[in-house]
Length: 144
Image (tube, rainbow, N blue to C red; front, side, top):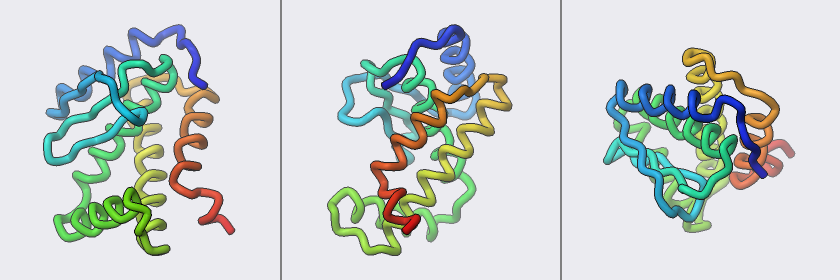
């Protein structure tokens, strides 16, 4: 699905420096999904086999999760963690599904803001990655 980016190396370097500055570690390894943010470890895991555009989009998105988490109080974080746990066990209530979708959407938007701040030019490829990822969280169901 992804594509090559002319400034991939430059974008990746900017994002890695940003992560270092915000005390986030990034691990590239074999991973079941595209990536994940592990808040307890302040670590972002990125699948090492991603296409360039998917890797940059995923990294921006996961950094977005770390930003979003830093703005939440502990009680809200606990509620979100419970919603994600239920979601991945296919036991989420409609309210929990909505929480997860809102959190995912917000992380994509924070990713856009980070890209703008770092002067990473986002193209249609970012929109495609976002749309594809949000489908996994039931975006269509929430609209109806």
